[in-house]
Length: 230
Image (cartoon, rainbow, N blue to C red; front, side, top):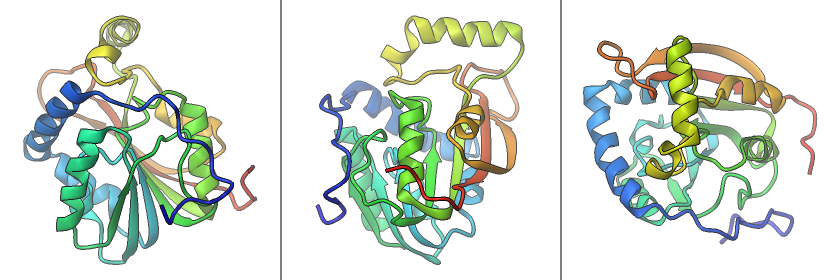
């Protein structure tokens, strides 16, 4: 793999393999593009990006058609085999060059400071080690590089957050491919040392019943200019 560097981290030994969830996610995510307005959120997430971009947890590649022509290349990391195959098909239809690569968020198989921007789209809920994954994002971004994020997490009132925590401790991660409902992506980004920029809450669906998965945030952050730890 031409992206690998001799100093890159080892990919996690245990592969991510959720075939049943992957099939369900692929079907649901396509429906959500129009029914929940997610396609428009993807446009806002990626607008104005340029240069080399790394997307972590690319899923079935629904972001690919929304990258602007100013992007020179997208390296899309996806560990789940079925979703990665679907992402490869999406990459062939994209208007910008997209290289779909197997790998784990906690051990990105790319060189340090190689990218102008990074994209996290509904992925921090399911990574095994959030601080380590965000440390890897910092490593591969150039100093001052931009991070775009669209994530779901803890939200709602007391009863909803209790429901989210209860589901996280019981059935939800096993049913939903390792997803956790009560994580706090903005707090995690701050703790990882990113400089936070504009962000706004998003409800999915915007109108209708509030679900444990409804509470999202769309925003931007930057890697500080100082060198990242190797």
